[in-house]
Image (cartoon, rainbow, N blue to C red; front, side, top):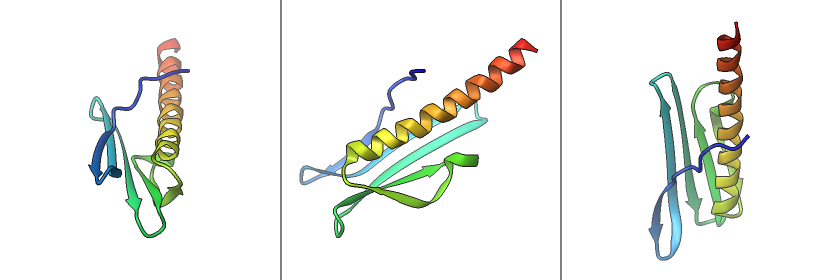
Length: 94
């Protein structure tokens, strides 16, 4: 299942993305937020996920590139949207 592309808001300094952010709010009852911060000491990108249930990650995950972090965020987003679609389809069918 393919969902829309995430529209990231990047903050760039000296040609490097130092922070990227994406937030989705569905009808006020589902809110998902992703933040990616660059850690210059390790030259890694830290992915923070905020939301309910399995989306919420208290410890950030580390990635070697901004693209890798964004791909994982998209996978988390897609999994959550598929779960929501399945629940809605079940409610409509019953």
